[in-house]
Picture 1 (tube, rainbow, N blue to C red):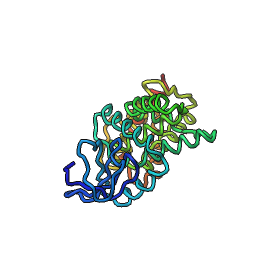
Picture 2 (spheres, rainbow, N blue to C red; picture 1 turned 180 degrees about the horizontal axis):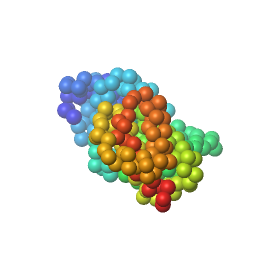
Picture 3 (cartoon, helix red, strand yellow; picture 1 turned 30 degrees about the vertical axis):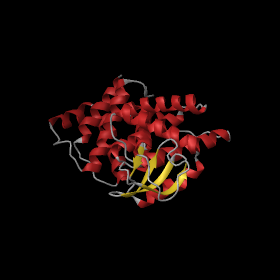
Picture 4 (cartoon, rainbow, N blue to C red; picture 1 turned 30 degrees about the horizontal axis):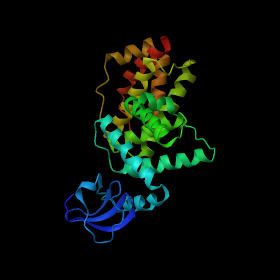
Length: 279
């Protein structure tokens, strides 16, 4: 941050809005960076720990409105937390996580203080869908307990993992939630139609869930799996129950996603279903 950056508004001792000669208005975070500062005063470069451009003006305004409700200690903690996530994921995080995860965690702590809990209906699916994010989310929960003294319920791990995935893929949390819910519905239908209880810790379940996620991603990207092959007829004749169920799953996905799905998906889904049925 160049020395010519000047304070526009002090939000609290650790956060200021500054005027940057290139990026115009930015949000700066650093321990004590805003203490005793006045509007127009130059900032010490060495005090700046994090710079948010937040070019989306709505996002920037949301962040400004959020800060007074979370406290300065919590903002400092979030800076450490997000640095940890970025390092562990070895990926640059989309800036929106600074608002989304800060808001989510502060509200979760508020719920805990009030004795309220919030269930995560697709926790197991999230664990299989985003294993690395889930691992880091567990570390985040440990950091919260160690630094802030709050022991989060296990369901929160899934929500945190979704925020991490959102920040490294630039997907909206709402889309990730919809996709996770769709996969949960599909796995429940598989159990119902095949009259089995899926072992959600098994490698076969993990492979199924990962395939469904990739299939959904392919739909969003308009990608095709490939042409249907002779294997299609073989599977249809050898495993009619799994084959018909695969078609039913594809129809549900088309209905929920409101987009066509490559027919070749039927082959791979049938193989996954047959493996689950015979395991």
